[in-house]
Length: 455
Image (cartoon, rainbow, N blue to C red; front, side):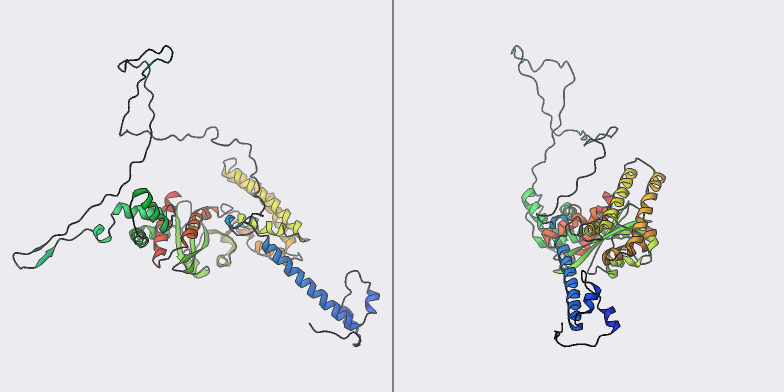
């Protein structure tokens, strides 16, 4: 900023009075008597103070970000983070509800039967003969236990002989497991542990060594998972094709590591299937590997810019993400923050209506009727928000008004797809992602199959 000499007089003009309005608390007539150079300097300093104040406020907001008001995961919350809000009571007791079908352990044929006969009467201490007949049907209690797990080791001895006709040396061929060193059941288990239960490669190796007394190298675990993924490639392709043609699909993405490079794990989920793809792009290139640009159904997602390629009439924004965004505005302690608090009230009402519908308390027509006043209140709030002086509220309001026609077409959150990716995120953290360049197929093949089987 240029320093001004207070003794120097600048020519006074009427336009200068318009460009240099008096600061708050300074009367206009008194402000007009001040030297022009002083007014220029004071105005420049006030503008700089306002800019720096806004910057400090922005940095404070970043420091106050938690999993409740941003996209940060709960594991990143500091000890000073506020506790999560308690769930709204629905008037029901914990546990199974009246009319709920019970789930009991299936009774199976036992491997061992241990007869238990009373040996003495607890009342008179008379010894009891084990041959006494039962007066009521015997009580049977099944106890399930794991057998001692030991690897089954097979030696394939390849004999080499000399052909008596042509004198050629002939060696007996070995089966596939002899070439890899691990049988099909173990290979399938490795793929299952990594793809379904999301254990890292190192955790799989440790588990096999600790539980099954089966030492296996980290490279062999990766190779086994890759063989499983290769075998599942046709199934994965069929799942992917089904997801890309579904009427409604929820999409999400999370950061990943692959061969020491940053990558992105994409997932698209429907009511019947889940499809994973691992790419190096978080933009449209990565999204193309999952859902094509010409997709004709309704896509549920957050507000990440890559999803803007789809028309507003085929977008369902995730209200859980929006709730965190609006909560951050409400907690910003700005003069316009009450606007965000009002929007949060309507979002709470929206979720209450959705939960009532999801739990069977109303039908689709009842849900639509309950959403009418909420939609009207939210639309009014967005119209008012577009004229807000705070650019964050104005920008969010304008963005949401553009997508307003897409709301209410599917479930209000992408928790469906988030539940599918979250275990994969937990898998990525302890294993630092995937160290092998072939890991994308191992992750996506088993992940798509296990996610679809659980849908």
